[in-house]
Image 1 (tube, one colour):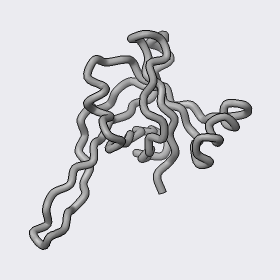
Image 2: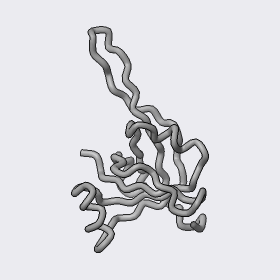
Image 3: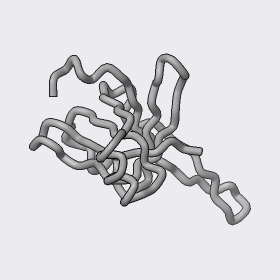
Image 4: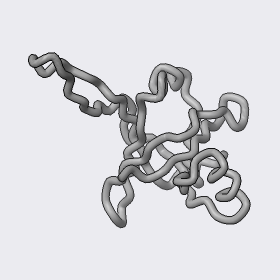
Amino acid sequence: MQAGELRQRVSVQNRTETSDGHDGVTESWSTVRSRLPAKVMQLVGRDLERARQIDPRISLEVRVRYYRDFPADFDGGRAQLLWHDGNIGDRTLEIVTPPIEVEERETLMMQCREAA
């Protein structure tokens, strides 16, 4: 992947649960990787149809450069992406498919949907 293709920025956030003191928990999101260069693409055509077979709400594909510690950041499905979209503002993306190495140790790809 060429560096010029990575024009957007995303941050990786993990869900943390803390006790609220009354036998319950409070959920919050903490940023573990900030403003990674990324390519955020709207899925169309055949790619969109394939993705919707996994989950009908998938609409985006996000690619970032490979980094060594990515399994710890995305462990257990407790992660989301915060897309820093300059036109609209920050948008929260739920990760539907776990990160996949597209080219060996070069690119990570994941399919996402916009959080409600």
